[in-house]
Image (tube, rainbow, N blue to C red; front, side, top):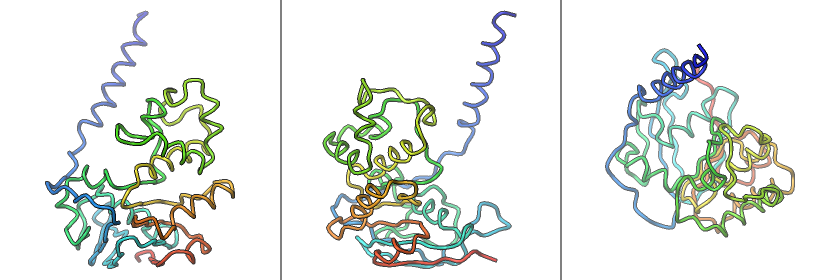
Length: 253
């Protein structure tokens, strides 16, 4: 009786693990993305997708984004802006039409190879249990600590870092418990920007940032010297005017 709480904790943990292990294995091709310093060319050809068979979120969408272009995706809530970004991460493969990365179908790529050169900032992301450094680098040992510190300054996390007695070795709680939403937002932003990705997929990255840091990140994202292809979902008209291209998508009927 005294140990029942522990038994229930174990059973609950096993059930949660089961929900993960029972999920289908993520589809991955065999082709590694070629190394290079330029951004990706992205093309969507008559792409249709829905989370269930009865309702399409994206319907017959075609677009082309040149390497290094800075693109703003605009549209009403529910129009499929976030879904479009998720499709480009390779998260979903059951779509109609085709998605080409550097003229090759996205399904042909080894998904980890593709993502290793992609910076992703989506609203569903979160902090995981591990050190501050692990949450930023995601296990990539080649990331330069100097670059991380520079990004911390650009997003306004320097004071936060200086307040941690264990610095980058500080252990963070799951889902960023005990961290403010603003700090979590900035940490996830650094995670996406670090290691000079060739493709950036971002959902409202400047929302909630103080003006000074918002301007610095905007400049970083839209810098013509930045070779990355940048695709940002936002309805900020001022930001859209600064991009090379604006793509507006409408909700499917």
